[in-house]
Length: 421
Ligand code: SF4
Ligand code: SF4
Image (cartoon, rainbow, N blue to C red; front, side, top):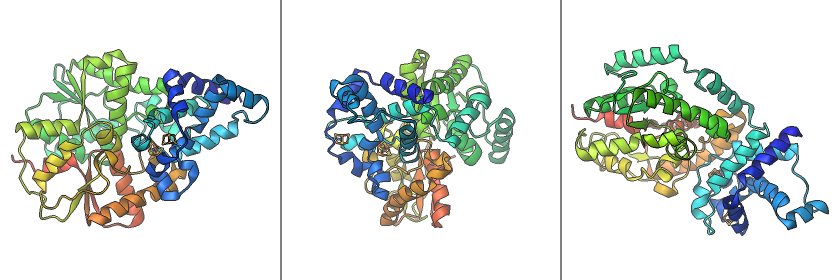
């Protein structure tokens, strides 16, 4: 009960004037439900976005409104219990990727994504974060990486990538312009991304470096909803950047990490504003449009239909919508076909927000991915490319689960493969 009280205090703390106005503005029209891939895939009304934030609304109503206090007094509304918080933990961590598509359709303009983060903050304070997610957070606190990217693993991966692909990876270079920060998903699961990015930046003549100190950009504290942990992981990156004296930080293919570092760090940690923080997709766009790297036109045109999956945090939130399309229209002007819906309205992969780290969420995650299967099949694509390693992990895992004959790749990989020497 003590933990529940802490959770409730945090929910109440989250309820400043802005949150209160958002909660009051909700008309309960239910339109957000249809936007949520978990609701669409299962028809479970508890997966409606408005219901996922209900626990925050109740905490606010019971604490701050006369009607809520009166209803609690006469027993019309029950106090929030441990069981309630555990129930909302499942709704929010298993069946929400914080993709924020629901906010796009809300006629009242309610920013559901921010409210859902507020709910996670309360659940985290109450100690009801799913065990596997919390284990990854603790690993990141203690070892610096949620996926076990220790000093030894980092060193051996970089050496292997440098040897295998014969690319120079500058390490801990003081005075470099650009610090490149990778996610452990890339380092552990998709190391060819490191080689691809090295090839691209070396060819462009960029003065760049990686950092031994600021090498893990994945932020499991952000998934958890803990401001303390999110800030701790963000500050490790910012300290590493400051030590090297770089001007900008390039986040590689990880959407949630980009969201945390690009948008939240600026509000929480003033030193973040000393750096330009940009996603690698934006860098690719700059390098291609300025001619600093050149691509072989039509390089992928004879390899079958390909499509592009928009990542919620990089395209919908980050705004890097046009660059991938400009690049794919050079690389595969005939083979590239858009899924529907796409761009801001794209359907989430279903694995973000920490969902893929929770084994018990697998059935819901796979159900959500079936929407993606429909989308891809409708354009007849056998290759799907994207700009987020978390999406890529969800795609590769789900392709295996469903026995699909798709090739899953990344935009940086395609660019690196099709560069004119
Ligand atoms: S669409 Fe907006 S107003 Fe309607 S129920 Fe959802 S959050 Fe409330
Ligand atoms: S943020 Fe995305 S996953 Fe979460 S409730 Fe909204 S639409 Fe559903």
